Structure formats: C-alpha cells, structure tokens
Amino acid sequence: MTGQRPARSIGVLGPGRPAIIDDAEPEPGPGQAWVLTEWSGISAGTEVALVRGTDPQHQVGWDPDLRTFGAPGTRAGYPIRGLGYMAVGRVTESRTDVLVEGSRVAMNYGHRTGRCADPATMPVIPVPDDLDPLLGIYLAQMGPICVNGLLHAAAALAGPAAGIGDGVRGRQVLVTGAGVIGLLSALLAVQHGAADVLVVESAPERRAVAAALGLETVDDTDQPVWLAVKDRWRHGPGDAGADVALQCRGHDVSLAGALKALRPQGLVVDLGFYQAGARAVRLGEEFHHNGLALVCAQIGRVPRGMTDAWPRTALAAATLDLLRDRGRAIRDHVVTSVVPFEEGPRLLTDLAERRLPSPPLQAVLRYAADSPGASGPWDDGRARE
Image 1: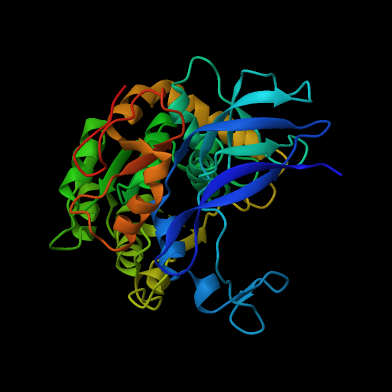
Image 2: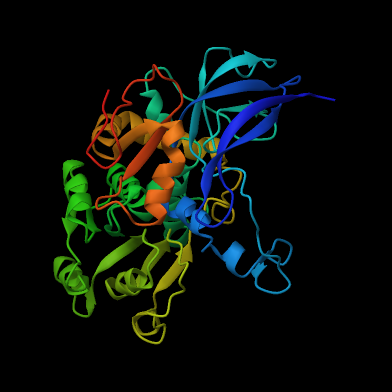
C-alpha cells in the first residue's frame, strides 16, 4: 500500500474559522508524480461562502444521486479540509513519462502545499515556459469556467457542432459584473469576434480595471442600465437590446436586469451563484413576452453533445490562447494581491467579515519565499514582479 506524505492545506474548522490544517497526500506510485505548489488563486465568492457556511450544501443539504437540495439530502459539515481550485506547481518527482520533473502544471486543487498528481484520473494541465507561471492559476478551472460560458452560448445559438466563438461572433454581448469571471468572459468574447461588448459594474475600481483591459463599461450603481443597453443596440422596430448576456454576478437583480436588457429571443448565459435565491426575477414579464432563453453554464459539464470535442484539456487550451494574447494586461490589472500562503486564513477571514474597504479582485497565495511578486498586504495596492 502506498504510504502518506505530509502536506498543509487551508481549510475551515467551523463557520468563520479558516485555518491551515496538517494533512497528508499519497506517496506517488507508478504513473503518478509529486507536484510542489508554487501559487494558488483565491476564488472569493466560492470560498467565502464555505467559510461562512452559507452555501446550500451546508444550509439545506444535497442528494448527489437525485441531484436535489433539501430532503433527502445530507447537509455538509465541518471541518472542510481544503478550499480552492486554482493551483500551479512544479513537478519535483515523477513516475510517469507524461509529467517531466522540473516542469510546471496547473491543477484544480486548492491552497495546498503539494499534491500527488495522477494524469489518468485528474486534469493535469501543462504550464508552458512562455507563460508567466502565476497566470497558470487560470488554466485548470477558472479559465475553463469562462470558456464554458461561451460554449453554452454557441450551443444555444448555433447547435452542438458549433465552435467556441459561434455564440458571440458578430453579436452584441452584455457582461454583467467585472469580477474575475466577468472580465475573463468579456475578454474571451472580444477575442472571439463579438461585434460589441459592454460590461456592467457598480464598483468604480472594477470599472477602472475593465477600462485598463480595453473594455467599455457602464455604471449601474444608482439605476438599472437596461434602457441604455436598448438605446445602444437598436436592431429595428420592436427589436432592441443585447443578443447575449453573460451574467457573472450572483445577484437576482443582475439576472433580472440582464433579461430586461435582451432583444427578443435573446439569451442569458448564467455563470452566477445565487445563494440568496432569485426573488427579483419575474418570469411573467420580459422572459415570457420576449421569448427569452436562460441557460446555466457550470464547469461540471459542457453543453450536451460537446463532451467529446471539449474535454477539460480543450477548455484549458482556449484559456491558454487568451492568456498568451492578454496575459500581461491580466497580470497587471486583474491580479491585485500576492501574499504568502501562511496569510491565507487571515485574508479569508477579512473577506468573510467584510473588513476590507477595497477587497482584492484576484488574490494569489505564494508558497516559496523566493517566488516573484510577493510583497505587501492585500489592502494597500498591488504586488508586482
């Protein structure tokens, strides 16, 4: 039987109690390798929900067979032994020809000092030498989430044989939310030929990031922006609004606004997570009268009929294309904080308790003292190489 190797991870001991936990990983066996973590990215929305215990698995329970919440599902408990899904590491030992010692890989584990990697059972994405290694945090999970959003638009508007850009090419695309998912989705829409892209965001610092990336924004702080969207994109009498909305906020008001901003028979691709439900969404109004479509795009599955053409490696390859094209700008403007792994629990506590007047857009944890771009607290600006 394979032995165990010590590892440390950031988990949650109980509601509001993130901590570094002593854990273990299997020793690498035949066909496996050891990955020593160098960077991991914090997905604030998902991780803060788990820290607080406000996610539906903890609140009402989940039945994985029926795939329903509530009874007869079982509520998740504590401790949670690991958070996160954006890691980059270096292969330090290998017992497989697939992973070369010294190479870097991206994987969808979280804030963990090391991992036993088995390419036969889990996605292990190479990080090429020409890419800033920190940006590899987007290759295994976060980038594929955004690519999958475009795939769902393509499948809905052009069928399962469509390519990634067929849902946005030549179309007017509204993106709600300038968080990481919204910004990467907007950049993907531009890269794949959208006729026009408009990003809706209330936070001025996030609008500034979007502008620095070359994206046009509109402020919805004081009033809904659906009328401005309808005025911007007029197609004919009784036909105004966005062709596609990529909804990247977990707020029902944003979803309601995205539906209202669509042209007749338009499409919302939803990448949000509505922990508080969606009471503001009124399906008897624009959704019904304009014949709209709403589809949920989650990384657990690509659109039906696209599974063979779009495995996780293909989603990662599309992400890599974007990172090669816009990586410097993403590194400069989206990655706003780089802090030591040991500071992770305190950062998560500050985020969960809303202590930070200006939360980081993308916080990254570093694991090696000599890693570049690693100074400064998370609330005083940017850490740079």
